[in-house]
Image (cartoon, rainbow, N blue to C red; front, side, top):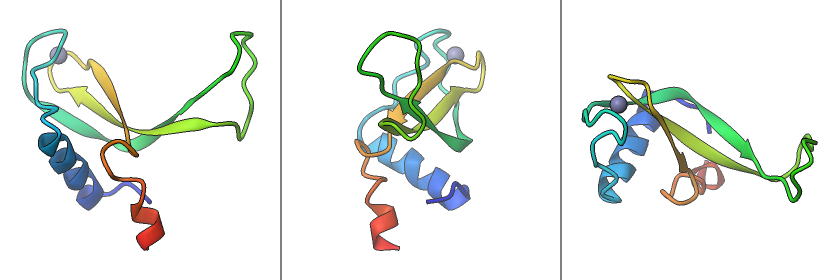
Length: 88
Ligand SMILES: [Zn+2]
């Protein structure tokens, strides 16, 4: 799955469906943007500073507050966006 406007709109719709619509937790403003890319948060079994390339990770959509830039991460699997690649 590659990020594009259609995917960004779909992410916004899924977050609305999940009622993830509260104002920014830092500044209280309520305008947000879906950023033009995904992040893969790496999971580590130990806190030793070593990162395993190709290890387990959580693919996420990144939402930014338009006012203060506070970032929130939503796991793509939890909002039903991960099975899209299987459909394609
Ligand atoms: Zn904010």
